[in-house]
Length: 278
Ligand SMILES: C[S@@+](CC[C@H](N)C(=O)[O-])C[C@H]1O[C@@H](n2cnc3c(N)ncnc32)[C@H](O)[C@@H]1O
Image (cartoon, rainbow, N blue to C red; front, side):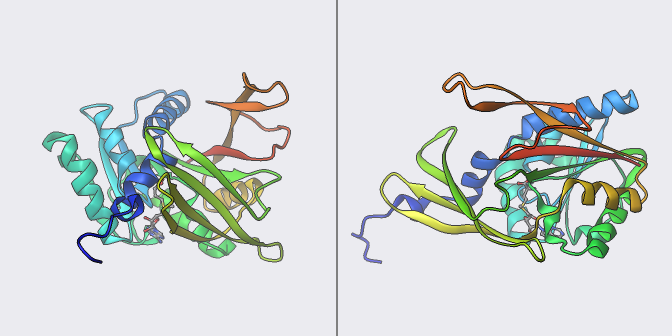
């Protein structure tokens, strides 16, 4: 590119910054883990293992939340872990960084050090496409927990989850860029789903397919059953509380608060937590 060529916003953006701001809410996750663990176990959880940790944003938030807390982050991708060290761990300061151990490995192969809570967020376990491999992952997650540990993951679904569709929305904190969730294809015979994240900038530039996911869309009963088969003793579903939208009487909007549920009405789209006790 000539030095005079005008740089686009897309060419100057960092996809990890965009991703964290668009899809992660580490404070809410940490609050949910803490409250859920305290409610079930009656003590404060101190050690978190963050599977598929990517940039280790949740591990960092966990250690910020209490000086006695430690975190272990596990991810296959070295460059993403390095980005996390540079942009999340180091800026948090030496004390916090020293309480986070990042392990570059397959989540199937890590069972030490043992944690109070293991989390697997942003649907990452959907990369395991057979009952055998997903069960194998749940067995590994269980082995990596203490005797009173709890495994927490999130899930997405709803009547629109199988539709091919694109949804664009603004990103809090970032004025000049929109986030696009693209459900590109769904195969009802295998439940294989291919999704992309794109970013569209106000100067017209874009980052297409910043992230690509080849997943199987698991259902809640399948995940619950496989957790029980993997040896977890009690598997709870936490549904988000919805209220009437201020903008439109016919619309509901999520509150970010979750309650334990066994029977709910299906929605066009939902994101939930599942918590499984060792
Ligand atoms: C959807 S991102 C999740 C990032 C972050 N946990 C979050 O909540 O947004 C999936 C991450 O899982 C990692 N990953 C995929 N397969 C893995 C495996 N078998 N073991 C460990 N990490 C894996 C990828 O490198 C990627 O960083």
